[in-house]
Length: 121
Length: 121
DNA sequence: CCGAGTCGTTTACATCTGTAATCGATGTAT
DNA sequence: ATACATCGATTACAGATGTAAACGACTCGG
Image (cartoon, rainbow over all chains, first blue to last red; front, top):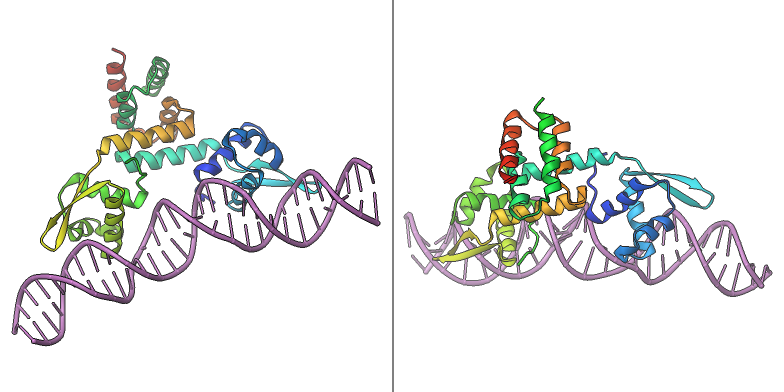
C-alpha cells in the first residue's frame, strides 16, 4: 500500500471518487477534456489497480472499477509532503504564498477564518 | 525557464538557497544526511544548471554554484499546483486536512490567525 | 617528471510516467 | 457462420528521475 499516485492517475481517481463503480469506457468518457485515448485510460486504470488504489469487479467480460483508497487520506498525505518539503512543515507560509499572489478570494479568506476560529477551541 | 524541479533536486537547491556560492564538494558535504555519493550530487547540479535553476561561476578548474531562481516563486508555484490538483484551488480544505490530522501546532494556528487578520484588510 | 587526487563530463541503467498501438479472446449483428 | 466491435492484457517507447561508475583533463606533492 501507500504507493504514490501520479498526476495523470490522480485525474482518473477523481472521476471514480465522484462516481463509482464505472467501466473503463465510462471513465474515459468523463475524462473527455483531457483528450486521452481509451487505451491510455485503460493503462492508467490497470496501473492503479496494480498498486491497490482501486478495486475491480467482474461484470461479464469487463470490469467495474471503484476506488479502494480514501481520497481524504491521500490528499492529507500529499499535503503533508508538500508542506514538509517546501515550508519545513509549517503551513502558514504556504497560505502566505497563495495570498501574496492574489490566489485567495474573499470567500477563501472567510473560509479560512472560520476554520481558524474553530481550531482555536 | 519554469522547468520543474524534482524532489532530489529540491534538496540540492535548499542547500544553495541557505548558502552560496558553493562548490560541488561543499554541496555534497551539506547533503551528507542523504547518503548520496559525490557523483550523484554532481549529476543533480548539472541537471539544475542545464534547466537554468542555478548559475555557475568558474573558479579555476571548478565551478561555484549559486541559485538562479527565487525560492519563494518556485514554492508558490508548487503550492498552487498542489492546491489546484487536490482541492480544486481552494486552500481552506488543505489547512483543514492538516488540522484534522493534528499537524497544526498552536503556534501554527496563531500564525495563520495573524495572517488572516492581515489579509482581511 | 610521475603518481594520486580532483574536476566536470559522458555514459549507464533501472524505475516511473505519459501516452499509446497491437493482440488474442469474446460477444454481437447479420 | 462471419465480420466487426469491444475487453483486458501485452508490448512500446520517449522523457524524467534517482543513483552512480567511468573517463579524460588538470594540478600538486614529491
